[in-house]
Length: 280
Length: 316
Image (cartoon, rainbow over all chains, first blue to last red; front, side, top):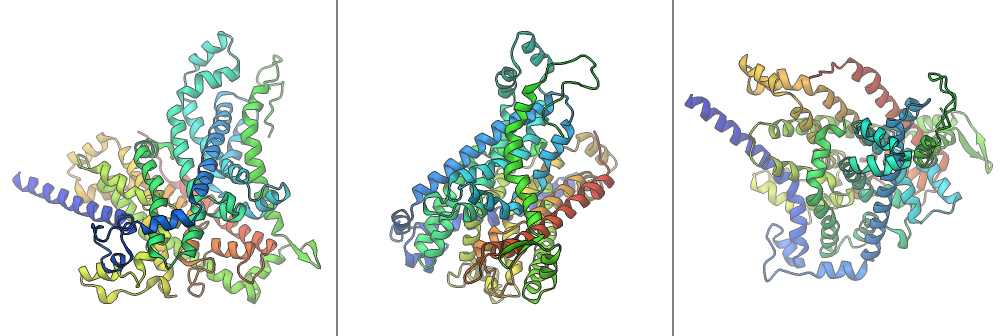
């Protein structure tokens, strides 16, 4: 019996060792970037592994970034695009999901399949014609172009996840609402939407990450100074300052920061969303 | 396919009022999705059959594809990009997904302490943008900074260090492994979820029969999570054949050194948008996008109609 206990102890320490090793592999690069962004140039090269000390502490990278790049504009653009796209994805996606899960009508399955194409086929493949369309409508170099593209990109998965959840809302509740004379719109907005709020949060997190991180569409549809997103802005800034290590490390740290904060706030939601089988 | 329901429902002979609300609920999603996604996709496929001849857009049939596959200016870079893309995908399948499965198997062990911490930390890179990931690794692998030689020295492997990103024969592997580092969290999470869904009774029955540890994983758990492995494989396939950002941030639009990291996404970008002296070519861009579409469609169809059908679904 004691043999068995020792074996299981060995096994669990091996598992911990492996997990700690991999955790270091995933976190170390981020950690290294952040500590070095706060050191002076000499210390970055001489002792990359050392934490900033009183003598090597230097924020010159941050002052360069904030003085040179127009990061507040980029940040604002990313924020507007992400929030507007998520809001539209949630509203339009929930409405369509409600129609598909609540009513039986001819073409229901067809419409469901049509909207599901976008889960697997990436919107990027239509870029040639998307750019053409944006040029024709004069939307190039506007945030509207990005918002429209990201809304279209997010709708398929949103409809898929939300309609799964809406099927679980009790029919009795909706029928009670109908008997009380609520319109179909009121049933949707006042009864169903509040009940699927957890699913909406999951969809919001899933939608947000690819939008915030996307480089392709900002590069092609909105590369102008006034419409750059943080991702594109830091890409170009780092490209220009590639020899100024302080500035590059500071720019990277600034770009990591919002993601890190959001992740720590939403990680529960995100992980629960994935593991609850939303993406089966 | 009508989104506005007809007033004559075949099943119900009684005349019902037109249910306009169904159309109104569906319309915004339908319009945005069709106008910004489906129609441009169809238009791109259509454009691949046209080219500019004497300043006029002319129907050329499969002419663009012939040029792409056979013309000496195009064929070399296309087949190179396709080959690199296949290697990129194979590395993901051989490294990312097994590591993901192994991590998930360890995380799902019962009564493992700090599981939430490990999970959160390992998933972190997946959320970072390609710009951050690309530049961080560019710095770490840079011989100027000396972080990698230093770390390799700690384990006595300093002599093996080389500027991997700068060498044509190792750059593609290096970029693929960076991408693996970033995305290992996705297979890990999906497999983890699948493992948690295995009912306790199955595991208990296995333990009663003396199947534990390794053989329990191989004989009991692995067959049960095969559907999830199928899903991560198809997600990896679609993601890899549509990849662009990481190569662009690490190696630039030229996907150097010497085109050794060029994949279909970067080739599409250069062709369609132009770079340096080369002008953008809409028709050839659309042709490459069409080839990517067909590759992805073939993969997705193979998955949906062959792999998923054959897989036994275990219902508990």
